[in-house]
Length: 234
Image (cartoon, rainbow, N blue to C red; front, side):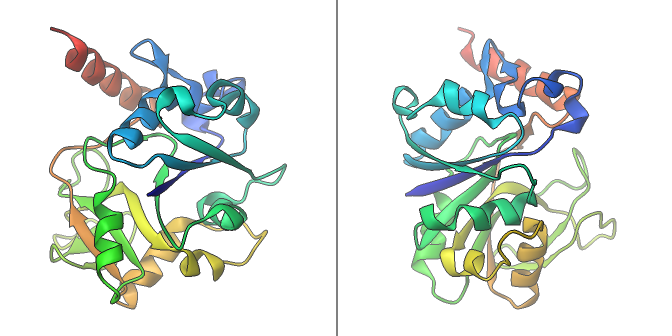
């Protein structure tokens, strides 16, 4: 099973560290974050990984290499000088994509089975994507998903009304045909693709039971650091 990691952003909230260091290489519990993330993917059986890199991405590539020591086989897709956004970066990786794959973000650490959304997608031909969601109730970030537990009814950032009590967990299974429809070389966001799928009732949901972690902010990185150190303690 294939996972795609979108790790090309500028990580402006983590400056000044990320002026010279890509977000994936930030230290978390004594190791670069990318090591933790790739090992989590491998534990879920996602051993075929495409890393989409951009800003300072050569540092990630030099560190990870083939990925063998982390239990995965890594292929690389580079955005080049123009940042393409999450959907644009995925479109640039089209030659590497399997007919169905899982996409996650380069700053997300998810304590669930990453393969779940992909298994559901492969089992149902009535959808083109399966989004992992979590009943967030606006606790960590603004909730952006309305779901009945089976389908993503609506997906929209920044919603505050009662119907939007779940959040995009950070892992979505997609068909390659969805990505092929994205205009190549044009900056665009994956959130627009997901919202369109939800509007057309082509986006199923799988509900995660444990909270997500992310290193997109100093607070988020500190929380994950504590979580991983506590998990490792006897």
